[in-house]
Every structure is written in structure tokens, then in C-alpha cells.
Amino acid sequence: MSDDKKSSFDRDSIKNTLVVAIGVSITCSVLVSAAAVVLQPLQEKNQTAFRQRIVLEVAGLYEPDADIATLFGGIDAYMVDLESGDYIDGIDPQSFDAAAAANDPSISVSIPKDLDIANLRRRPVYSPVYVVMDGDATQQIILPVYGAGLWSTMRGFLAIEADGNTVRGLRFFEHAETPGLGDQIDKDSWLAQFPGKLLFNAAGNPRFEVVRGKAPPGPNAVHQVDGMSGATLTGNGVSNLIQYWTGPHGFGPYLKKMTNEANGNG
Image (cartoon, rainbow, N blue to C red; front, top):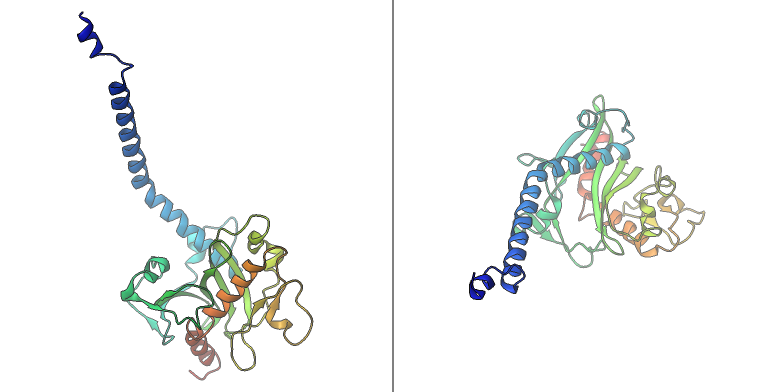
């Protein structure tokens, strides 16, 4: 074989190396893309099950050995028009994507700067809510709440008694706060402070807050929980997201409507 013909088949040539590298890259890209497409339904199913579990936990209804979907089936899910506080039809609360909706101008609104304490900029026009019934009476309401922390958007669920004021619990299902500091928002010892706290003051204004350090005794103690050591900004974020979503631009109209109905004034 001539030297010219042999060189055209040189496996160590730059040309052949590039061809092999490109071929491997394309093959890997195709495999990764295919795997992502195949696994996406399973990932979405797992994410839905995880959020349902958090709803059940915050409602005090989670049972480790029970089927999550079956337990969650005992909770009523609705879509609420946040401005009016009324239930609406035509949107599935289970598949509603709040993050995507907030980025869609046709189904979201800009939050006035003086009200945007959770640093969201926009919010959806509608939101899911979850209601636990005791016979014909509302036992508790679970609201999806979210807002900016130190490093991330913290997303969770706030459970409230039927009076629309008393907290039953708070749980987060998504955040990226600092390990060992801000991630204390997941700790049962910290979350145990929330049940029994009141969201509103006597004038009906959002008052709940995570204080810096220990919550002092006094008339405001019913609205306060202890802060987290080394995570003041994360604690401020929790305060802000709860105050925003229970306020007039969040679920405030809905909570007032539910309270009136619970008191027989609906």
C-alpha cells in the first residue's frame, strides 16, 4: 500500500479523531435526549406525588404506609380567582403550573412595588387551594405560598384553620437555601413553632413574622416564631412570603370569604 493511501486511513490523524469525537458527542446527545423524553412522565409523576405528600404532611394527614394518591383523594382541590376570592371552573388545580403562569402576561398580573414584599414581580391571576372537610364543615385550608429567600425561591404549603387566621402548619417542598443555616426551614424542630400562631392582628392586617433571635413574650408573641441562627435573610423571606400571600394581593379576599362562610355570613 502506498504511503499516500495509508495516510488516508491513519486512525491517529486529527481528521479522524475529530470525526470520532463528533460522532460520539452526537450519539450521547441523542441518548440523553431520548432518556429525558422517556423519563419525563415518570419525573412529573414523582414531583406530583412529592407535592401531594407535602400537602398531606402540612395537613397532618400523611400516613407513611398508606398510598399517597389515595390519601390525597380525600382533600378537595379548587382553583381560586385571587382578586375576587371566588372559585372558578375550567382549570385543573393538579396540573396548574404557577411558575409558568406567572410568566404568561395573559394569565398573570404585575405586583405593585409597595405590595411585592416577597419579591415576585408577577403572580398568576388564579391559584390552586386545598380544602379538608369534616362532614359539611371546612376543617382547614391549605394554600400554596412562595417567595424569595436568600438564594432561591422558597415554595411550600401553608395550612390554616377554618377561621382563616390560625396556622396549622407550614412545609416547604422546594428551595436552595444554605445547608446548615437557611435549610432549617425544613427542620421539624423549627416548624413545630407554627401551629396555633395567628396570621392577622385585630385590625385584620397580616402580622405573622419570623423574628431575629428569640420571639419575646408579649402581645405580639402570638404572631411570631423564633428566627434561625445565621439565616436572618431566609427568615425574613418566610415572613414576607406569608404576609404577601395572606394579604390583599394574595389569598386575602379568599380567606375573608371563607371566614364569613364559616361564621354564617356568606
